Image (tube, rainbow, N blue to C red):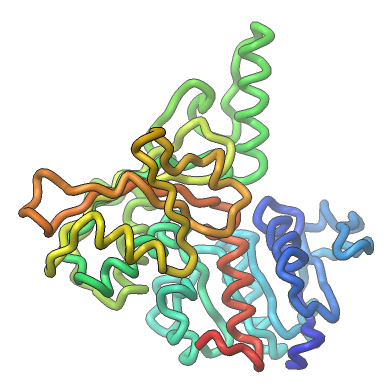
Length: 342
């Protein structure tokens, strides 16, 4: 790989995350020497702008990865399982945004602020975490290092962006229809999202938790290398266009005060403290949207826990950025031969 001229492929280039990957590569001045944009046959022939030039979108096929250095996959688990072996065989390093390989013990699941060292063990494939897990990991990891997590309870408030561009448009259309007095239709998501909220629309497993909740728990445990860490999760879809929020309660082995946690997080990479009780200004998805950092605030004592051993906090992070595209590009930056990030 030439660190100054990297051949990048984006699978699912026209989707919400694919579009954001392209924007983040441009925003970060990533050394893209050649760009291959891949999508479904119905998107083939379109063009996408990158660095002032129009680049054609090609139909995804097994032979599309010749000469590719890094391939970003964001086209769902089915496409990942089918085409990632071809990309690896062609010599590409794959960063996969789908859930297909996240829990494979041979595949590193990485948030660079947390476990960049796990990239040393990759064999051509790196998994990008679930959006809520990536956002949560950035906020919790520095606290875990300081005081060792004993228990985690998290409730998520997940925006339409987590279900893709079509869900975002459906929310907007429902608001327009409401204003104009038209009936509201739910076609992408199972329920009306505008002026409503509902349990995350994934299958309920035998343990009573839905797939999103089980992913969140398992992925944090894997990235933190704490398979026995007790966690509880409740995942909810809310009528927010972009950026997820999470209410988090932690119990720690060692004492950790709100002031200490605030100071630790103020120095943590990828974290922005938004915690102003005087003006009641705390993390909001509106402000987190478009920001690469995870916003953390409402840092306070958990009154139900032993003194100095429990904290509550509120976080917001852009699902399309740290929850997907930015984390993927950040992994790619760390993989560059001249990287000093790990």
